[in-house]
Amino acid sequence: MKKVIAIAVAVVFVLVLGVPAVFAGNNGQAGKSNTAHLYMYQKYLAPDGKWNVYPGGAWGKMTYFMSGTEFSFVMNGHGLAPSMEYTLIYYPDPWPGHGLMGLASGTTDASGDVTIEAVVDTGDLPAPYDMNAYPATTTYKNIDGSTGAKIWLVLSSDVDCGARMMTGWTIDSEGLVPYLFESKLVMFDDTDYNVATWNLWQKNPADWSIVVGGSSGILTYNLAGPTFDFAFDAQKLTPGTGYTLIYFPDPYPGTGLIPLGTCTADANGHVSIAGMKDIGSLPAPYDANAAAKMWLVLSGDVGTDHMTGWNPDSYLFEEDPGIVYTDTGP
Image (cartoon, rainbow, N blue to C red; front, side):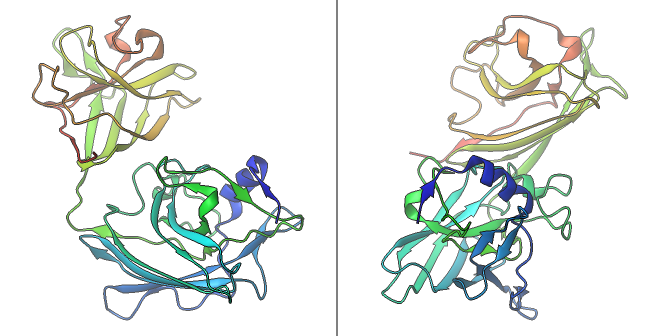
């Protein structure tokens, strides 16, 4: 096998790897139970740029619970490289899968078989920062339009579960990848893991009332976790203008503010920012507020840790009173 960090391949991969496996078994819910099945297959990059199931290649089957306090599963893989360590992961697009989760690892036997079983506190799957979570951005939009989470079995040497991203891409000269890929997106409902949404609005600086028909946005985020995971979408902004989503601690100029992400509004005035940040609990101890303010501001008005300009007519401000997030990490 030839190991490469194949960014060009990965781009194609994001776009077309979701093609359902033609050899798939009975994916999905088992009867009316809480149990579901996912078949996984080895794939190769064909000369036409499409990813296809490799006939006679490695395959696997994962059985999992569709809801619960934790993601519980068992995965059996067959026909893999012998005596190699593999890691089962949740992979959120786009490449390199920032925010991916290592579910569990195992080493194949001499026949290339492996069983991986675990119970993991993942929160809802897909996560809010995954482009496959939304109909407008899912990589399955030209296949069946489905949304959900991608589950892969990859070589442990190609993934950094601490940094939560892919760091390698193993592929041979014929385009064959020694991983197992999903034949369907999956959904998991974490019954004790709350995900919340919060509105941001354009406001009138004279009295801070919401501008009727003005620009607005929606922030989706986790209430607790080792990182602050979020997705933000806004519309009716100024096309071609750079915006930054920030946590703003009072008093002004917001010393200690945290930039969460930056994006330039498209031709329709839309921005989309998503990510995961190790920022500690919100609000921060130095914040005068009992809840955290989230603002979308002009990128030119914000420095690394405080506001450097003030053009409130162009900002989106939090819906009172703000949000609270609990950092559960070490």
